[in-house]
Image 1 (cartoon, rainbow, N blue to C red):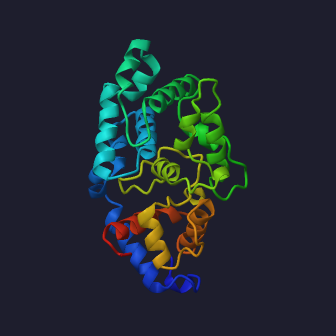
Image 2 (cartoon, helix red, strand yellow; image 1 turned 90 degrees about the vertical axis):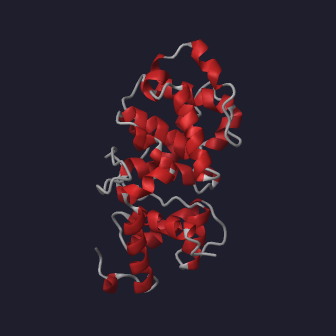
Amino acid sequence: MPSTELLAPTISSYIFELLEEKSAQYNRPDFIAFDPISIPHRFSKKQDIEIMGFWAAVLAWGQRKTIINKCLELSQLMDDAPYDFVMNHQENDLKQFLNFKHRTFNATDTLYFIHFFQQYYRQHTSLEYAFSSHLKENDVTIENALIGFHELFSDSENFPTRTRKHIATPVRKSSCKRLNMFLRWMVRNDEKGVDFGIWNTIKPSQLVCPCDVHVDRVARLLGLIKRPVTDWQTAVELTASLKLIDPNDPVKYDFALFGLGIEGFAK
């Protein structure tokens, strides 16, 4: 744990102690049940964790209870064996997805996701490579990984244009909240039992903090963000501020900022 005396002047001892306290409070197994991360935690096979983790992150907007219920519905449509279903389904098996919908995510999007997963996993054993293969040697953040993944995901003659909005990219200045959250789940390995830490070719120090409404409000109140809009550069700015506290694992403070937001700290 870093000494408060070593922190930059912009990070007060109050903020340091608050973020440390709240990270410890929320980064524990009790957090899982009421969060979308509970969906991939239902599985033990690496590919199942990746598929349902990715889907849970992409569908993570709205009330958490609704998100979890929709993900459970999706999993049940795949017989609670997503990797096996993706690899071995028949054409007739896809008809049951025609009524699946969450917000603006509909059957067209769902069917393309299944198509992408099948094509990808026929060539690779882990979704990790879909992100890490685009990183350059000296990359400080995962920006190139996100850009490369977006291009890979949409590189198909079957790609429906409407599905593009569900996979964010820094190129469009998106904060990439959902993908950043998914990568946090897959990469961070602090043995607290929440994040999985099943990928090792992306460093925790390269992760960018997911910037949802709760995190954004709290971070602005604490002076961790100065940028007036919320976009990719805002997420990078927030992460840079958090690196003043822990340069090796800045995104662990996502737990603190999100938890404080849920508690109403920024209201």
